[in-house]
Image (tube, rainbow, N blue to C red):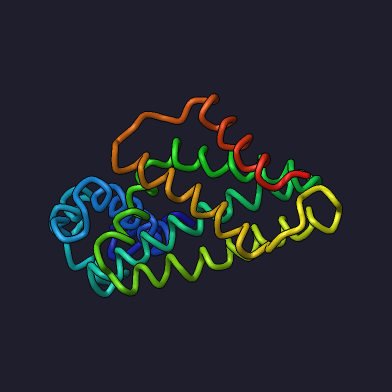
Length: 202
């Protein structure tokens, strides 16, 4: 059911309401940053009482942490979904790069949230970010290890290679977001893929 009845008036389903608040908060935080963002403005945008927000998120900080976690989890899911659809290690690297750029090109608000989460010196937000991306690093490392075992990639340190790949992609994302650039061209994406593969292919 989409809503429940209370004294003759429909009340929004809690899960739907929580998602509405989170979606609107992502937009507000992305546009204004953490500290300037005003939850009263968020409430006004949603046409709800400010107290309703606190029913779902105990504080502005908790709401922001939820936004950061939503962003990094969505990126991780998009990457694994694309990569798991191909078999060869070099194809997996290509799929990962394309999924990464696609995310930041088409989910720019989430990209902003991720940058804010690292740049606002919010320790817990950064901890959320690091925890999820540590898993992502392990995922990249497993791809590199498979490529080495199959004789596709050069023998080397899979962990260090995964860090380099991750840093290159994250650095590109930060510059992209901070400079408010338009979407990445196919040429940029293909050049990034070629650069990475030249470094690891036999």
